[in-house]
Image (cartoon, rainbow, N blue to C red; front, side, top):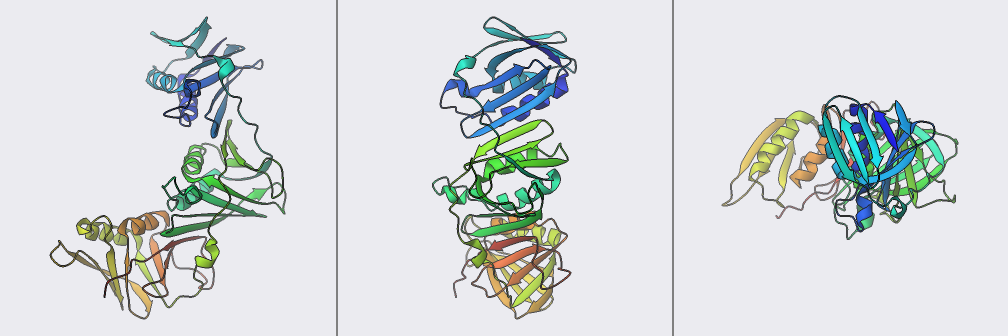
Length: 378
């Protein structure tokens, strides 16, 4: 087996494939990256850890068919450091020799026969713009839980109904919901999937090099549930799905509010960061909305204290409310708008953060970030 390919193309493909390799593989062979040169002069690089698979296909300048398995992390480090010249890889017995300019590396190969076969992609279901998809996933994944003992809260729930995709995630303290349009292959396509949050966020971000992302997923009642696939520009990845159990989140979203505040997102973020400097890890930032201003406070008693006042456009009864400052900042960072709107019911019930003034006050925003308040002691 041998091939020649441009250094930048190879380095990018190896880095993309290596990102899914396990840091501590259950068996040594799973640390490997499989390289295959096909009869039609294509190079396929793949990795699989029984949960997530990744494969990228490249066109070669020249090549001889064959398969080899080498350390994925080591190959990634080597290709990243090579000079900007064509790269040759030749398999010589139990070794793979990488040559680029005057640089030469010899890698030990691993037994290809022990490497698991990549899972087949589920049926293609439709396409969505890669930039839109990456932005939507990032907005929602920020609210996914990090506690692996509660796996259903570490995922992002994807609900597909016709041409509408709804993404939702919660860690019990906040909830993020985003709706977006896509192009289904079948107009009446329906599906529900729970996707590991970290994997989905990394995948969506890594596929923006292409204009569109194809989503491969079985419809409700179809075959192959338990896996979802994404592909774009010669790259494809699959991941196992989580148990579909998820909180009935729609009932948590208020539909009527007693007050709202519109405030500059950047000014709000900077003020929260400053006031939070005196807040302990689990102590809240307090917000008092009055007329045309909001007073931000943190700290009390014998502790360090901070106070800042910002102008707002406020409608409704005065309200005192407190939030975990990190959760509030992550929500503000996700709305992607110069103007933030906070909708309130009472000081003890969840608030809804959205971006910008709605054109129609009765319309539901595409992105909603629900944040639970922290009860203030009286």
